[in-house]
Image (cartoon, rainbow, N blue to C red; front, side):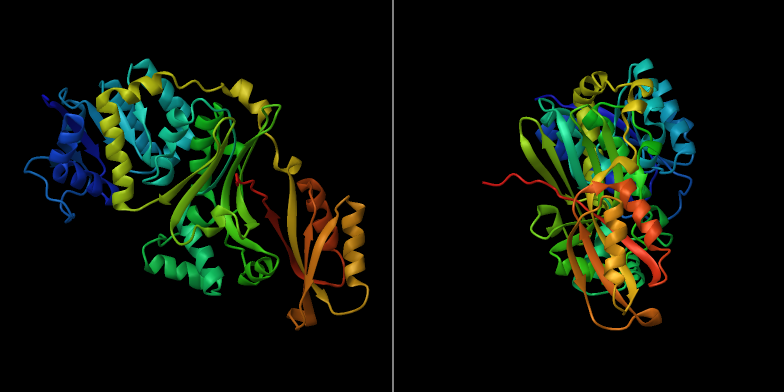
Length: 440
């Protein structure tokens, strides 16, 4: 079989970029044997041309001049791995305008400007491939776009941030406080020095915006997604939830109802201990999807890191070179914003069960006062848990699990409970998410 030469230009020679360069240079023979494509790294662009990397490039390949890539008409595919939004957006637009297909792992960029970039690619007769943007080495984008294309997707539940999952796993299994678990994640390289993007839930929201747009066929913006992070989570609540049979995870959730209204949210979630997602520990990612024909499918694996992400990037390069990406991208049809916006459901309309913890003064009638407030807001109690032992201001924890109710009812009830003079500190409220599972 005659080989087809494919020249690739890479912008961004950091952790993932180094992994991509390593795979292209070291696995060229293996890739050629399997695909008939001979990948050649023709140009690497980075502002830092001096630092050592874990891969050696031929002389003359590395440069800080983007134009050397853009002006080279023999380079068919441009890979953008610089991160961020403004500079990355300009780089992608220039690649498209100079006739190059684009491969990217930039979730923040696609979540914020994806609709604009997709239109620019189509106007220039090019494609954008972005498998690595959502879950590292997991083939989730191609799974949704092609593997599940015969299905109407009704729901997805994802653990899509390895940093948060590592922190919550340590808090669960090692009884660590949040600060200690975060420090351990930073020491292992799972969390950045500034972990805000992860622990605030924004990274998960970026990924959900991309996944939801592909799964539901809607133009999604970040404003459509309710986001709540994990930095306020206490190991006590993880422990009490565990006593009730739950495990705490940060979930990215997308659901479409029978009227095609979509609920998109990222928040800490108690899920049943025997659910498959509850067993996803450490820095691993997993996404459960429910399709109309296939039922439940689950994608599991490493969602970040140099080589898992590089694996997805190189897979996209190959898919572009084979012409597959151009076909699937050409048939990417998203419902425009003027039709999508009215279909985005607000968090106040969410119907869920809830975990509530209040620190109460140890005196008669306290639980009755709380129960009355909940009842006045049409909230039914499904279970309670109370431990002995004094907390701040001689209080004891009272834990309540509710039956299904609306978020706005819970919010109103919590606001009223806070006014009781028998309550100490801020009440804690965590959603209980009942994820269905296909079982024999």
